[in-house]
Each structure stands twice: as structure tokens, then as C-alpha cells.
Figure 1 (cartoon, one colour):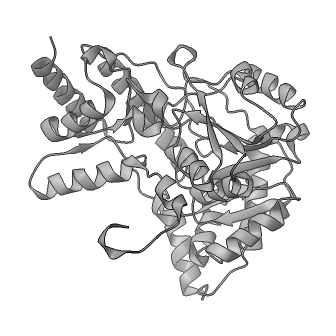
Figure 2 (cartoon, rainbow, N blue to C red):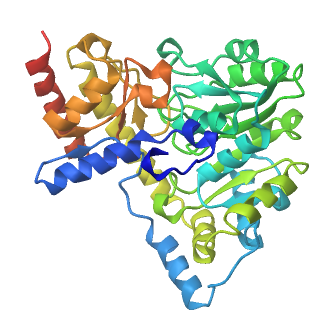
Amino acid sequence: MGETGLKVAAGMGRLGTETAFEVLARAKALEAQGRSIINLGIGQPDFSTPGHIVEAAVKALADGHHGYTPAQGIPELRRAISIDLHRRHGVTVDPVQVLVVPGGKVTMFFAISMFGEPGAEIIYPNPGFPIYESVIRYTGATAVPLPLREATGFALTAEDVLARITPRTRLLILNSPANPTGGVVPRAEIDKLVAGLAHHPHVAVMSDEIYGEMLYDGAEHVSLLTYPELADRLILLDGFSKTYAMTGWRLGYGVWPKALLPLAERLAVNSHSCVNAAAQWAGIAALEGPRAPARQMVDAFAERRGRIVAALNRLPGVSCVTPGGAFYVFPNITGTGMDSRTLQARLLDEAGIATIAGTSFGAEGEGYLRLSYAASLEAIDEAMGRFGEFLARNTR
């Protein structure tokens, strides 16, 4: 390890990163130099956490909720999560199966760690959230990419998934609505996939549904929880960051099969002990409080989505399919003559627009950029104007 002579574990060399945070740091550094930067890179709602949620956390602190909580989470929050899942999906989830964790990444880290080891295979979406591939490689397992194509709206097909399953497959990772593409998997494909998985009972499934309440144009979110035939091998990942604009609160949860829950709880005890007490009471307020703030945020995102998609499709060398969910667009930039990383760097340095290269989400993301439309209409309009001026200077 350089000049120190320290020898770290080989797995550290296989651990990747999340480029959005690197781009954010670079953007902040440029702003500190006096540059005007429009950040369409970070996946974070630009809305404040609703007031009733903040008030619940303040009250919890005033009421003396300062100590450790159960490793699984406080019973009141786990019950509230169970009720919310029934409200949204019509399913009955035993609160005992809920493990509250500090952010959605923890559930994926636990699930991948539980099934990943040398000789194992884990299937993950590509382009997809970069931490999937990073943690798979860290465990020593073989990362098996599931290519997502623009032609299908970046939605998986059951046939593609099932064709990649082997006797060595331990875990299948699904994400709908998806980061970075905004793709939403239709019910018909999920039905086919679940039917096909009946022939592969050795494969666990982790369904990342963190964007499940961010959908547009009548798109339907089909939760894997609604398929009882998967109950003994399904891990649901969900949380509060996106729906309730609570990214900095670090509050998420997993729903685990009862056979796996003791292992997940043991990982929790060994890693983070428990989740911040006041944040958990805030989570209860989020689930039990008024739904209007979440609906208003999604309505605002819908308007911004329309604005940014139309603007991107007017740019030379750029085309963009309309995403069905989340708050990202994934435009095709092959017509600009630049690769994804080059365009990402030049847009930031020369035009003051922070974006994320498609290759930050896997090799299949080459030829694309991810832009977040969790920004004001004014910021989107200004960014698209700068993008157009940049392309006018740099393309024929």
C-alpha cells in the first residue's frame, strides 16, 4: 500500500465507489472558485423534509429518546412500515420480518454479503446502481451483468434474466423503478420472471424498490412482495430517502424471509448496532402523516421530467426516452462523438453542468449520461441552454 508498507485485504482493491459523490465534490470545489455550477448529478430531492417529520424528531429528542434501540428497529416503526406496505401493496408483512437500517445501501450490503463468496454468481442490472457491482466484487463473487436496453425503455425482460441463471447463481438483484435509467418493469414481465424462478429455487431475490412511489403517466409499480411464491427467498429493499426527501436522515429498511432474518440481524449487531433513535420516530411520522407533501413532490418531478426530456431531444446528437419512474433521465449521447466520461468531464469544466457518465453505472452505460431532474425548472432550463451552447461549440 504505497510507501507505508501496510498490506490491506485484497477485497479492498475490488471495492468500487459511487461517482455521484465524486462529481459532487468536484462541483463544490468549482463553486468555491466562483464558478456557476448547476448540479444535475446527485440523486437527491431538492425539497426539504416535510415539517411534521422534522417536528417528530425534535419531539423525540425532547422526550428523551437518546439511547440505543433494538437492533431490528423500534417496534413502533416496524409496525408502521408493515401497515404502510399493506396500504401500498395490499400485502401482510409481519413486523418481525422488518429490519430497520441506516439507509438503503445497508440492506443491499447485507444481502450481497450473505450470498456472495468466491465461486458464487450474483446477477445485477447494468446499467444499475453502482454499489451492486462494487459489493458483489468485494465479496469475491462473480458479478453477472443483466444488460438493460434503451429499446425496452431500460426495463428487464424475463427471458434475459432466466437465461443468465446457472447452478452457481445465489442472488438476483432487481430494481424498478430504476436508477439510473428511470425504467419500470411491466407486470407481464415480472409475472413471467416469477413463473420462471419456480424452476430455480436456489436463487434468492433482492428487490430494490426505493423509488416505488415515484411513477408517472399511470406507470404501475409491481412489488415483488405481492408474489407469495417468493416469500421464502425475497429480500425487499425500501426506505425514506427519496419518497420523503430524507436522504441525510439515513433511514431505510429491509423485509427479510424469516429464515434469513437472524443472519441479517447479526450483521446489524456487528456493524451499526442500531439506527438513530430520533430518526426512527421521524420515520413513523413520515408513514403516518399527511401524504400531500410526497404527492406534491412527485407532481413537481413530473413537470420537470417533461421539460428536460423535451429539451434533451432538441439537442444535436442527443436523444432521450421518457422514463417511467424515479427522477432521472438517461439520454443517449452517442451522436455527440464523445464517450460518456469525456462528456461528463467537459460539461462540468466547460459548461458548469454536473452530470454522471453512464459508465459509472456499469459498462452497458457507455454512450449515455445520467441527469437528475430533482432540480428547479429554472435550473433545468439554464442547464439545457448551457448544454446546447456547449454542443454548438464542440460538434459539427
